[in-house]
Length: 424
Ligand code: HEM
Image (cartoon, rainbow, N blue to C red):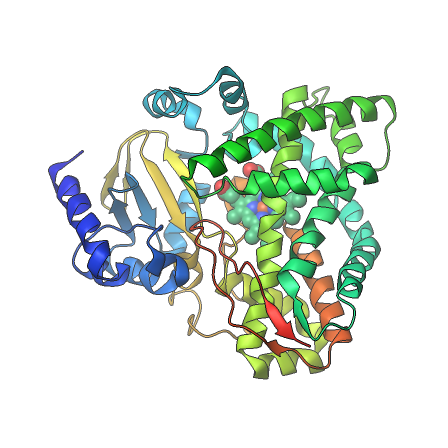
């Protein structure tokens, strides 16, 4: 580690005890996304980082953070930045050194999210056949039924937790049904999926262990279900993925199970956060909530602004594939680079008055679904789930207001409130 980085790290550790992360930045201290003052409100520090140094080195993470909108897009579309850690022998060795053979096998068969072309192009093309526009559109009536069922379950309760009753179960049920999992397995599936999520953005050994166990269980489960569906195909995503073919090419067994797991990981918590955070934003801006109630056809536009203002995914990462001079910063092959989605979405050079939430903002620009070759494959499904959820909430409740101030979770990669209790 460079001497300047060592000093920054030491100062940074001392600094977090006494001052906020944003003050730290002003004094040249490195950004630490786990800092409580960052997870409770990440925007001031991402903004400050963009103003001071839009490519900022964090010794704590041994990684750069990029926070300008155009630079974020540049990294996500530049072929010299990849997602596959296996391209970097040193880093790969460090990460896999103490892995069990089973864990190593999972790691050596990454999902498309962690692949680079040409493997990524191949797997993504095949997986996209499960996301054909018509198929996703055909899910709307059932999604509406699920939303109504979730809201019915709260009956006439005076205080309803909308995260627990709607935002959490909705995407889990949608994914389970979309994959075509047997109904009697749904509870077990929901349990594994909750356990799996414990492993994101944490260093807690117990949580990581539970998450890994759920990961193994889910892979075994997808293997069993796929074998059954290969014998008896249905009109569901697993059957579509099994039969997906491009010029004689098909998904291998591991690619199929990993894609199913990725759909769960990538599509569950993110959609929960979009609905929970979006509803919380409306509660914080009652005038806009009323505007939406009188103009429900503005819901799709409001969802774009929710995505911009409170992005459920706060960062994604790339590795430098060859030495690059990135706007004056020399990035060495193998270097880890994070892109800051809050930094990009609130860049004032791209969105006017970015600190204001306006559901009628004209064409809000955001990278909340990523950008470039890894652009979210489930974006239209997530938008549809959120749209139906807000339509049904507005149609059902004449009055909603905060019963308790919710608390932001402390995961620096997924931003969301774990409970949202509203008086109905
Ligand atoms: C509001 C909800 C969602 C948000 C904010 C979100 C966000 C993202 C982001 C930022 C990426 C790019 C990651 C990167 O570049 O490293 C991504 C990729 C992906 N998302 Fe989503 N996502 C959401 C919902 C979904 C849903 C519902 C599904 C599917 C059921 C899904 C499936 C995927 C997949 C498969 C990828 C990987 C694409 C690739 O590597 O080519 N996402 N998502």
